[in-house]
Length: 398
Image 1 (cartoon, rainbow, N blue to C red):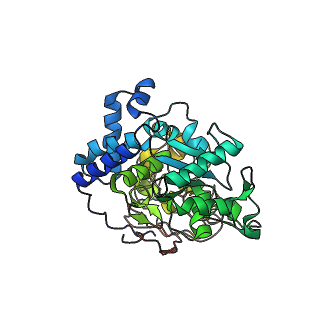
Image 2 (cartoon, one colour):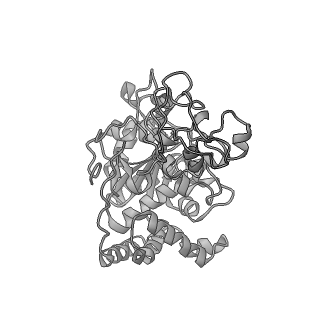
Image 3 (spheres, helix red, strand yellow):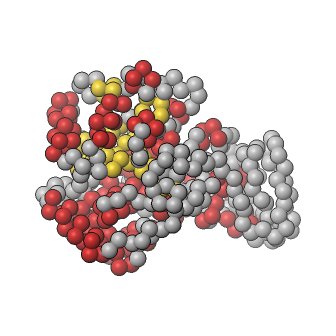
């Protein structure tokens, strides 16, 4: 179970304002003006202020920082970003940039000042390479590096070559990371290696922090949630520091289990479960644990942030969590539509919310029996964790 660090003391408002002044002066004239961008998309000032309040609270900052968060959001569209595509499917980019009804977070991501992003940048070939090299030289120590995908390391990285000169992904990632203000690994592949790293792993695929031997800010998920990337960028702009991390992930976004804030939690506590797809329990919105929901083992804020302007997320749509923000979920969480055979989740012994059951007792499919708690309304989940596996500064008590 991840150990959540103590929240850091909020930075001084005056220090934050001075920092934003400096960033605005340095990057003046770059990128798109956020206020004009929002107006062009019909997003009102009131909606922007509501979003600002939400992000301020999500980042564990007091309400007095709402004005600073609004300024940081405007600066975010001007700070140079180098976004590398490595061994992946581009699903994380597609998730953030191809929504039909983009909210403020999606618009900020869409209009970040991408000095290099192979999927969306206009230049190609030598012109694209020149843009990259100019950024590495002119903005060293100031640009943000976002990496999407794992890094193949076998055969000195020769399984992945990029650009007109055929540079390996491993070599490119090292060069770009060396001069970045921060390296952010987005999605499961960059954070934990993705399915490419599954046995037998012929390409030697590794997550970014392992392949490069550096600290990264990991924002896992398959795909990741764009709000978590925007919030992390805002924190970096406001404080100039990496946010408090838990197992390498921003604590503000990954310190609670899906199970803890699940909209179906009352049904779990009442012992009301979907037994099979399409049954009466499914129509009533019962708990999805018996059909494989991995919410008790998964640390993420999907319930709170959701996707596409909080339109939905898997559990609301009727499918259980598959644990995609956890290390090796494709192995450890399988089979995805059955409960874990070695899981230890206490099933409560309570009257059903719908008045349909008085007692609950059942056995996990395929293996160990699950004990019945006398009056439990809270389940303890066991998760295989690797505390401090990277020796990351800021993890576990940062």
